[in-house]
Amino acid sequence: MPLSNNREEPSNSTKHLKNTFTVAPQSAPPRQIQSLQLYRLDQPSSPPVIELGSRQQLVLKFDHLGSDARQFKIEVRHYSADWQESPLALNYYLDGFYEDYFGAGSKSYVQRPAYRHYEYVLPNDRLSMTVSGNYLLTVREPDSGNLLFSLPFFVSEQEGELQTSIKTEYARREDLREQDRPFSEYRYPPFVEMPQFDLSFQYVQNQFWGRARPVKHFDTSTPGSVHFHLSQQEAFLGDYEFNTLDIRSFTPDGTHILSYEPEFTPPNIILRRDVQQFTPAPAFWGGPRLGRPDDDRSAEYANVHFRLETAAEADALQQIYLVGDFNGWTINPLNRMKFNPGSGLWEGSAFIKQGEYAYKYVTLEENRINDLELDRSFTYRRQEYITLVYYRDPVRHYDRLLNVASTEY
Image 1: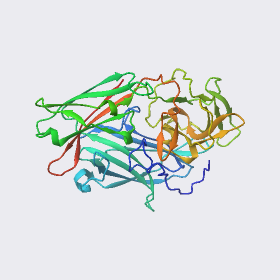
Image 2: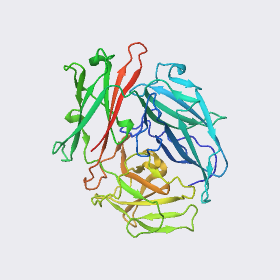
Image 3: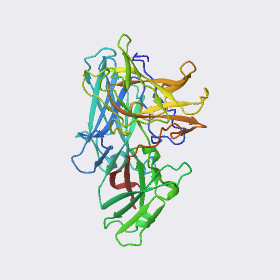
Image 4: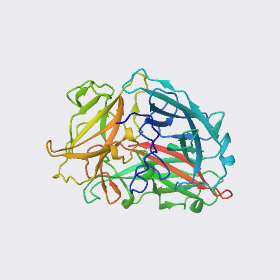
């Protein structure tokens, strides 16, 4: 992996793909930016959701490869519930400046490669949001204005009372895998006068915001509340699987890490092969939460080598990609797997910092991501479901986010 500081445009290769994990306006970072995270301050496992008017804040974290200090420009823009550009003017939803700058960072103690760690906390006294809804945080180079990356986040009013339960159904699919159907009740606030027209609802599984499922079935017959759910055809996969990667230490353990090669720059880590139809017990619950890279300045990066044994006979022309917390769940040519006839395995690598991560192998077929074909034995059960309630403002005609609730099941 090149470690130069030459400017690169971020990869937007997934924007034309179907079934992507990310929202349409989101952009992946260039290779010089690694370990990208956005979550509620002091809650690394939380979704990037804060309550309007509260003291809650989000923290943006990332590393920039190289030892030189950099400056960055940050922008925040409001979007509709379906991630179209908002009709609101900047001065209506932002207080303070419309953009801000940050830089300097903390220099790493390691040199193979060296990097600087950057953090930015918002809202703050220079940049804050004044209305609820979907937002996109964008980071650019300050001089050229070139886009580096963008991430979604959410500001909720937490108005009304929202409760969600999950019903698991069996043997409904042709492959007999479990399905989860969320069922919710929302007691709406008094200012909602026409809930059947002004309210809308979405469910998101495991913080894959690009796969939000709008609710088509809801009942407003009970005064003051709405009952809504997903149909059987729209249900989530209840045994959706992740592989787990624990590289908090690079020391070979014979179980997961087979070998560590420090003579290379960056060093190499060779993992034990993954077998499609064999699933060991997960070591931890990582979830698709942009990973848990080690924030310590002594934490190192490595080229981590993955190997996959598929159940079916290999087709060398098949497009298999490695996706996970470490690459923002995006299809990246650098993480494409290649079939090795000598070993009979699919082999690929990713540049990853010490930490804990979740990942999957997916295929790309006719511009569509298939994330189920290479699952293993369909036994992993724990999922996170996020319910979002939107209200179409009758005056300004934008989508307010009235309530957000997270349910682990």
